[in-house]
Image (cartoon, rainbow, N blue to C red; front, side, top):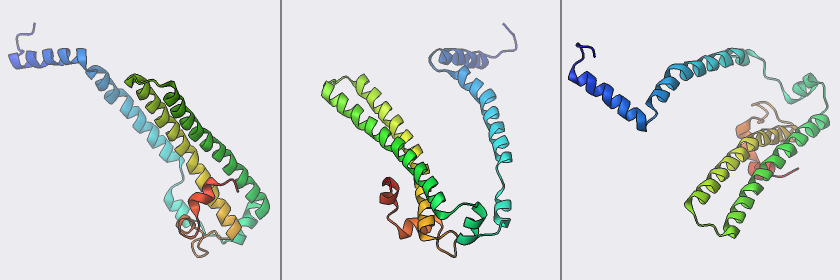
Length: 179
């Protein structure tokens, strides 16, 4: 053993090794030293690919008719595209919600009372509800785009931004309907 080690250093090393048996300290240290810098670099690369907000601010704000002309499609064509997308997302949303209901009903009908079973059911429900929330957001965005097309509003002066959609419509009912 090294003669320069003091008793407190030996005590700290011994505590580290003893704690490592119970807690994954070396794995945590590995994650901090190796994985975190890798994730930070990945975020930097992703941010470099995204357009900057300065460029977006410099773009001219188009009116509804100018934007439709620039798209090269008619309002009806765009509405059909957005309606199909919204219906696709809603089918996935309602499927996840139905699976949660089915899972809970199956658990209650099985009359299982073990905590491990209900912990697994709760975990699956949280997972499925998270999946439902993930597909609800694109459905909400496509519902907003449909509202813009139907009301012929796009820009802020035309009162077509997202906050106007929330304020001027029944956004939740409109988003959850297949229309």
